Length: 324
Ligand code: AVJ
Image (cartoon, rainbow, N blue to C red; front, side, top):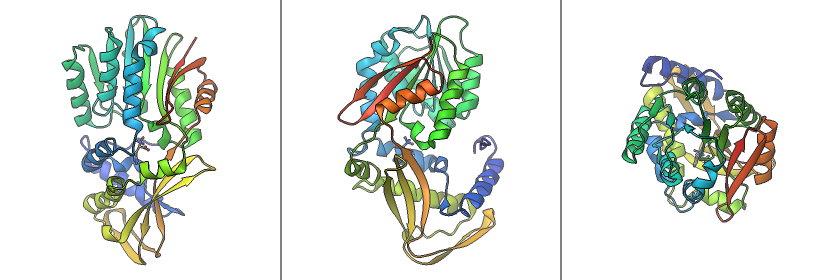
């Protein structure tokens, strides 16, 4: 996949890439909008709100596992330990780990496509006494490459990929991503992966279609963004948020369903199309795993073993993959 330029770096290039990509995905059957476009400023704020909803337990379950098991998580790594988080967001989780492990990490590398998030994460880590902080305003892969190039000569590196962000990747893409992380690491290093587990359908429905409709707003914001940034004329009222559990594919799928027959124009994407009543635009997939399945995926990616910490109630797993 070609990386999308970041809006802050080159707004015109970003707009063109955004327009070209949705012009293609909205012509598919079913019509689609890539989930990475959910995270503009408003979308990121809505996601932060989602993480505080009682029905969406991923963020809280992961944070408490990190705090409870911090020492075990870093125990077997050779000293000194450097950390690199892919998609650190505001740095809440890495700060919890650093705070709870009670040791000096030699360096912390923060990778995120949001500069505001990087500023926040740096501030948070500084506040708890972390000094060697390197930020990489890049997509996951490019950021990982940079972090690895700049790693200290001695000791180990632990890569963090948290929040079940892996769930947005289709399984073959997830597998290749894990293998890529593995190839950039060396013996003694590790990957800490946070992934949401399969759970009863009612729980998934509440997590992704919450009674406060925050997730619905998060999803519909995609159309608002296309209207504002690409001259679209989506009528936000004419769509409803819909979530389906696809058991065969082990994923929650999110859609925006057209409530009536309508015509849509997206001027800057040079795109016009009709939507039937009930026609759905597919906007996100959140893949769910089995704890053992995660361990197998790690082995398939070339890691030599995995240790897990599981919240059995929220059904969420932290797995530390190691390299012998
Ligand atoms: C940030 C991709 C892990 O799939 O659970 C939350 C995004 N979408 N509610 C997820 C999301 C709807 C979230 N990830």
